[in-house]
Image (tube, rainbow, N blue to C red):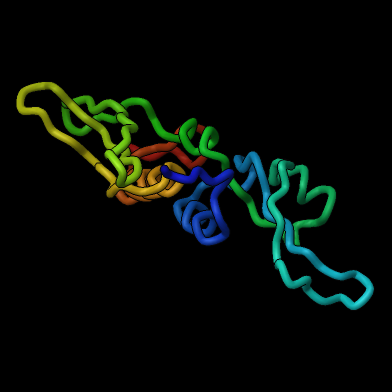
Length: 150
């Protein structure tokens, strides 16, 4: 049985930021735990907050706050359709039996073809990989980055 995570981890968050995804779109946040009396970091390091990044940064300050995105936030970033030349490709998010989930863009026009198919992974990782592929190939995400076109 596949275990579902609540949000992106710190490494995935950095990968999204590297793709130009704005911190302000994060619907959750990681908060660094600090022992204020000794000004040292606690052993656990960070905790996941259900506060969106913008709110957590206002309350706790931007230092020690890292954006985190839930699966629903990541899915909402993915365009439902992309165009390559004159062909339209439609988003597909599907499980691979006992291997994880994959995301790709499929077309049934002419010879069936696929763009950006991710390797099987946990759903959040599959979304991050799809966003990286879209970014590398100059496709715009929904409401997260500056507009890009092919």
